[in-house]
Length: 193
Image 1: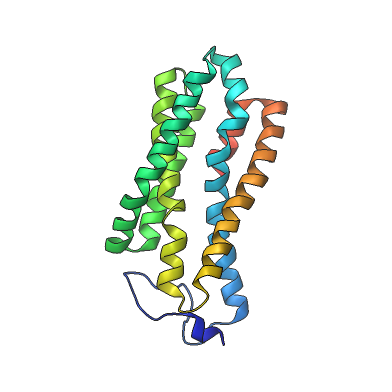
Image 2: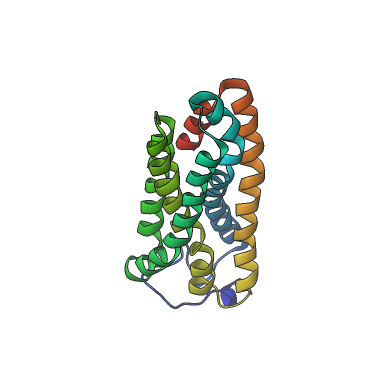
């Protein structure tokens, strides 16, 4: 019984469907929407590996300098989790996720315009890391615990699988684009998606 899966508690957010009689189709549509949100974020997190050599070639930066920006991004990803969780408790999922998506997208767009190392640290290290962290770390647990009474592990697992699928799809796609048209084209695609 699908209705039994949903918990009717409200922490400033409600599922985008009628919880009294959800249909399998509506739940599947909802999962697809969540995966569509998670795929690009997860792909963006794994993109720097594809761009290290082109960045070295384009700017003359060392692997260590580029890796420092990636490390900073991982740090800000972790710092964004508690911030995201607190904001979701206060304002609900939708506005917080939209805000972090805008922040991450701004960071990707700013990376496209990068001309110096400090700009790369600010755009990829801080903005992209914080934006991705705000959408990825807390979202699955919040959705599972807020909207689902049973099978919370399954819901969290499906959303986590979306993140892994995003990395697989985006890394391959970005590698092809970087090889064909350069790293800026790949970053431009990420900003659009």
